Length: 293
Image (cartoon, rainbow, N blue to C red; front, side, top):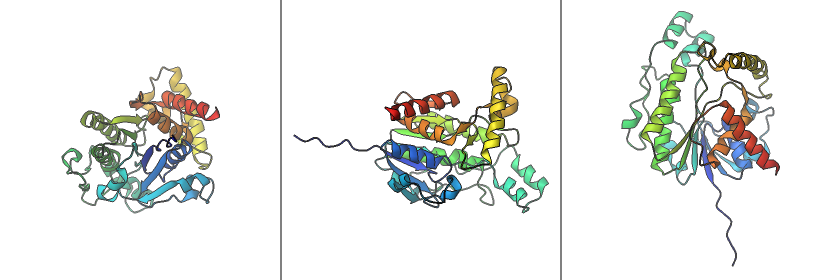
């Protein structure tokens, strides 16, 4: 009697057309997963995430769907039947910074707003009805750390749990940075805590990388080199400089390493909760060893 082939596992990567998200998609395709990417623009502009303007061969196996993380109604149908969902969306700079850098806002007002103690996110995601869109609370609809780093992640996790998705990955961060408002990292930690405590049906995994680099983004290479020195110095002090250096005291990782680690973590039922740099390297190495067999 003939046997049927095992069904492919299915992963949905929200933010799959980004620098890290595209590498998560690539790793999942190479591991035999059925992959769907959700982003506002669909397929990546390849010159922005790789060293070539041409789409790589593996990309043809990905369904590049359009959707808005603030509007679950635009992506909810793609979560049905998924084995894993990944939140790989986040902002490093709020509009205050960008406005200052682009000359659209004064330095004083921009920095005052950027470093305010708190900003609005959305309505409380935990009190949201299934499928209800997020409503930005800042008067000008600004995309804040609270809205993107925290509330959109909680909402995506809720929607995934509602579709009985077994596993959820949130791309968090190792630490903040002296040049960033403290809210950058506190909103990520708030997302982790809320997802872990409020959605126990999910096997939630919180990846905490430091600075990510790749030769396709040449400007990341010297930054990574300096970060490696900083991480070495911090390690020699037993990590006692982390409070001062933030993510600068954490070993930089090649983006492909984190992409491999995400998929390997999903395939290992024992992985859950925060995943720091050493464990990410271990997971990626395990994946590459398996691929060489």
